[in-house]
Length: 371
Image (cartoon, rainbow, N blue to C red):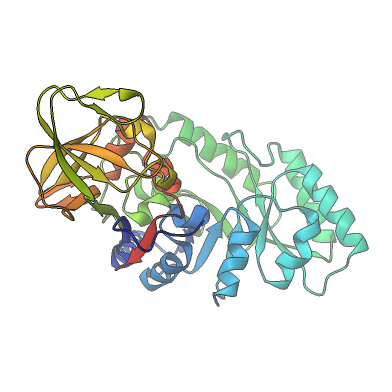
């Protein structure tokens, strides 16, 4: 998708805030390393600039979701460790090994396929693996001591495989009730005890765990959403230190007009003016990730909240202005404007979702400007 460089709608990313957030997390830790999670185009913020900013803050490696995301980092000259958090088709293991990219091993079936493929396709360098433990998330991962022990032994006996790490993921680290978190922690610890020797990396901490659970178990933290300045719990838990949001979304008015009472606005005539009103048009729509459900939400113009009226279109949306405003006046959809602010969390609340999703859905059509 081609970014819209020649329109006023801009996604601004303040890279110094990402660096600051990583650095502040680093100060909280003991000797744990930080791997910056930059999957999904760095949660919509832009993988390559964010990766550089994270390293400046003290990150020592990266986590991604796709092998292609890892390869993109390598193409841009990043030499740090990279872990793909999903399993990769055995066909592509030589590519991972060639580029020194670590892969997740999450079940016996995948391991058998990998062993079969590598038997017929020996490698010059072994594939680095991280064993995934399902301690209660219910996604990928080894679930029993027997299956984990068997996988460990097979990897140790395979010349084309090297066990670099073992990890799990907590499902409720961002909630007040710690009961299930502690159950997962106990299961992970019990499964670790099965192994005669631990690999280089042991990790269980995501952003929430590092913030509220003293980094969990292990020597590595996978730093995701909080690196971008967002509270992993939404509004449930209080942060131990302030986070600086990195993302803001701005545009400007491309049309302002006074319309009479009874004028329909947008597809389906879902909004009809109740009196003579000033209506402004903003060049952003659902193709940019500004969803149709944003109708009824407000944006900021000259520090004043202006409601989105009518249906959000593919490329535009309309807002009700309190007064006549000049063409080209800045419109803030996320961020600060004349002392007022709209947060990503407020957008998520309106959409009845989480800020992770909102950020990730901001499309590549938006021009990303780095400050």
